[in-house]
Image (cartoon, rainbow, N blue to C red):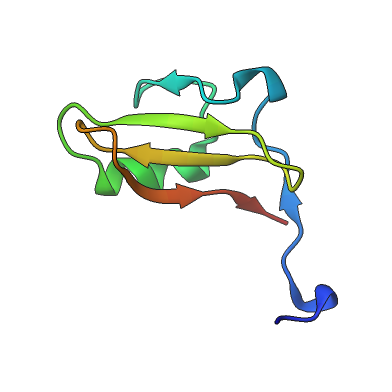
Length: 76
């Protein structure tokens, strides 16, 4: 286990009411740093889903079959 003082501090990157909402890849609510990484990986028909967490939220890249490909978050 990584000691708490070595863990990156996550930055809130979405609203709690967006929990499980899907966003198109061109949605301006997706933070730019995350969007750049998502665009580099995404395929046709893929989407982004926001998941609210106590740490600040994660953005999930989901393929056209609804499978989770990767999770992204912002670090301080």
